Amino acid sequence: MGSIFIGADHRGFLLKEFLKENLREEGVNIIDLGSKVYDKDDDYVEIGLNLAQKTIDENTKGILICGSGAGMSIIANKVNGARASLCLLEEQARMTREHNDANILCLAADLVDKEDNLKIVKVFLETLFSSEERHIRRIQAIKKYENTKIS
Image (cartoon, rainbow, N blue to C red; front, side, top):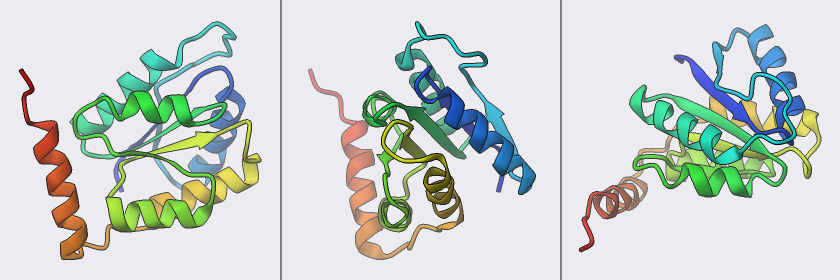
């Protein structure tokens, strides 16, 4: 596995730091795209867009964290090629990788404790896309829509 990007706003900052430390101990190459310091006035939009674009450009995976996970999920999915999924449970992380080939995991720092979030991340990073025809067909339909210009 190549490098994994991680980013968080102020509400996800402490969880991001916890995840970085634990994942690096397990040999995962984590690249922190911010916020680099706690800033209660930071903006999740810039962080989420930047991480999603870099994830697509480098064909890797990313992790985004905010309080609910919803804001990061919404903004990341604005980037063509991003398949960001908010996961509150390990089973969601497994299914979103197997069925949707999700490339960005969004976490809710305020709703799920740090140990459970770490378990969710591990499942996300370890689970492979199933490559079943029906799942490939659905992802191709998403890609086709993303590349359709609406006038």
